[in-house]
Amino acid sequence: MIIKWIYPVISVLVISVALLVYEINRLDDQYTELIESETTQLKMVQQLTFNSNRRHILLFYIAHCEDSVQIRKMEIERGILIKENDSIFNTLVKINSANPDQIQIIKDAVEARRVYNLKSQEYQAKIETSSKPFLSYEMSRDLDNLFTTYQNSINELYNEKNKHVLIRSNSYTSAVEQRSLWISLFSVSPFLIFGVLLIVLLFLLRFVLVRASER
Image (cartoon, rainbow, N blue to C red):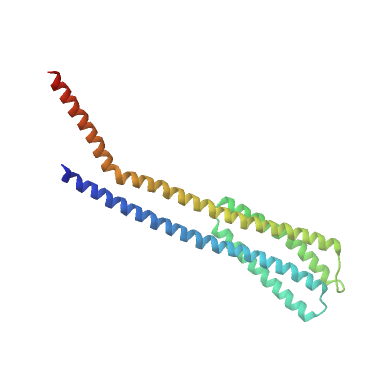
């Protein structure tokens, strides 16, 4: 009787260990993918912040610079920063196309950037047609306000990315904990079944002995 139970017990234990190893490897793969993907995106968002700050500062440098060669260099750099941010936003939209919440926040940042760009172009046009240094408190204030709004939208995107990482990480952990519990229950199921059968047999044996003593 005991020998007959050994093989099922060993089989269940082997299957349980195999399932547990599979779950651990699967979790490791998911975490690796999550870290690689989200870390890359977070770096991209940080680059957006750096590029937009640098571009904004360069515009005010141009407004006060009287060296045409330096102005041309700064204009070229601003153009490069604009194209780089165009590429980053397009990549973020493509990567997050299946995530409505992420897409909406990215679109909000793109819209804030569009509004800022319009004011920036207006400011630059004034610089080109005015004497140096170009000073306009009202235009500078409006441009700074729009830039702040744009930067806040990028910050919100960064925070949302961080939150997204935590949510996905917690979901993976929760799923693995649940599966691990089921695997653990499965691994001890032969012992539970054997225990139940033993209790039933003992109860039947006691019942038979009681009936026999009554006779």
